[in-house]
Length: 214
Picture 1 (cartoon, rainbow, N blue to C red):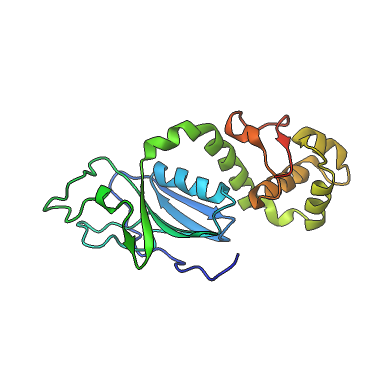
Picture 2: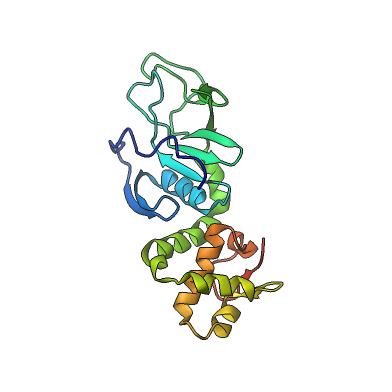
């Protein structure tokens, strides 16, 4: 994983009004994560799916001078540096007002303790619905069952990929293991970035998806 994560736990666990609570297990962090709202869940899914994300932490730091209190949605550690992410909400404006104390949009490209801040519009994730749904399935299955997948299977799977094979082909070829375990091994190598599947972006997850080397 590299260097020790700068943030490891949330500083604010109060559920925003009308927000749904999601309690999920994060394979990348190997711990439980609590998220508030579908937008935060989608962003978390994208962080788990990205091989460029080495580590992250939900609600790691309060936004300075904001009333009522609000936390940055995520701190993210990538190979080229850290960043703080904040999801824009309805009502976030370009201009600070007396009630809010600070404009959320004005935080974009600023820094805190040398960490750049990036504001994200949840509407931009709409075009990634298929990928988010597919990775949601992968992450849920890994959270529940990856401990049952033997590492030798992952290595054998990668060694047999060649120029690429479908999920169905790999399940039919790796006959020493049941098809569910092979599917989970495929999910593991995808999650680790040891293999890729371009169809995850465009088609619902299925046995005809092609698994290839990066």
